[in-house]
Length: 176
Length: 148
Image 1 (cartoon, helix red, strand yellow):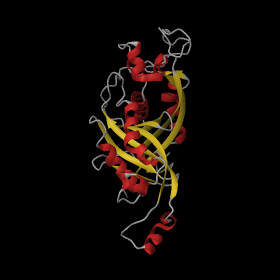
Image 2 (cartoon, chains in turn orange, green):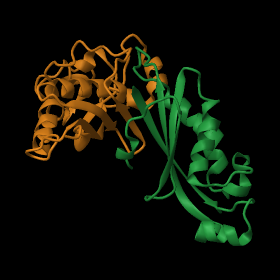
Image 3 (spheres, chains in turn purple, green):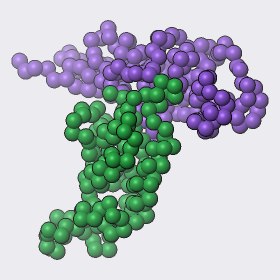
Image 4 (tube, chains in turn purple, cyan):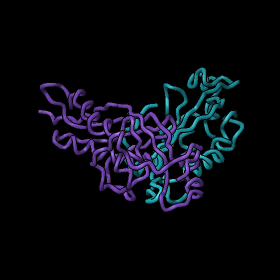
C-alpha cells in the first residue's frame, strides 16, 4: 500500500474588529510619535481576513482531510466569535497584555486553533492574517519572543461590560 | 516562523530583449513582450520579512521606516519609468518578473536594518503571473496559497 500523502486544505474567514496602539508607560506625545493616527484611543477598524491551512492524511472513507463544515465551525467558535465586531483592546483580555498588532493577533489565533484541532490529530500548518491589501502576517506556530501568552485562552468580554472606558472627549486624539 | 508581509505597487514600462539573442530569436522567445516600443504593467510586489518582536510595541519594525526605505531604494527608481533604460537597477538585466524579484531582493537586503531579515520578494506582473525570489536557507510557507 502506498504511503498516505499529506494534503493541506485551506479555508478563509473574515472578521471585523477595532483596535488602537498605546503603550501605557509612554506619554501622550511619545505614543503619537510612535503610532501616529493609530494611537487614537477611540480606535479604528479593519476587515481582517484569516486564511487557515490544515495538513493531514485523506480519510479513505470521506476523501477529506477534514470536513470543511467542521473547519468552518471550528474557526467560527474559537477565533471569529471572540474577535468579530469587538474592540480588541477593550474586549479581548489577551490584548490587555499585548498590543493588538498583526504579530500578536497571529499568535492568539494560532494557539486557539491549534488547541481546538488537537483532538482531531490534524496539524495546523500556516495561518495568514490580512489587515488590508497591503499588510499581512504569516505564522507557523513556532515560539515567538516578546508576546505575552498568559491570557490567550481567556474569553472575550461582552459589549456591555468591556473594560472601564478611560477615554473621554470628542477630538481626533482622545484625552484621558 | 512569523513572517511579515507588506505589499507595494508601481507602474512601469519594459521590454524583454536579450543582447545574447538575434533579433529573430528575441522575437521568437519573447513574442509580443519584445516589441521595441515597450509596453507596461501595474506591478505589485510583496516583501516577506522576519525579525524579533519589540516587546513594548510588539511590532518587528517601524512600518514608516520600512516604507521610506522601499520608496527611496525601489519605488523612486522604478515607478513610472522605462525599466530597461531609466534606472540603474536593471543595467544589463532583462526585466522579467524573475529578475525584478531578484534585483529587488538584493537591493533591499543591504539597506534594511540588521535586525530585520528579508526572506522573500514576490513580484506580480499582472493578476496572472508572479515570480518569487527567496533566501535559499529558509523554508517558506506554501506561498502559492496566499495569492493576491
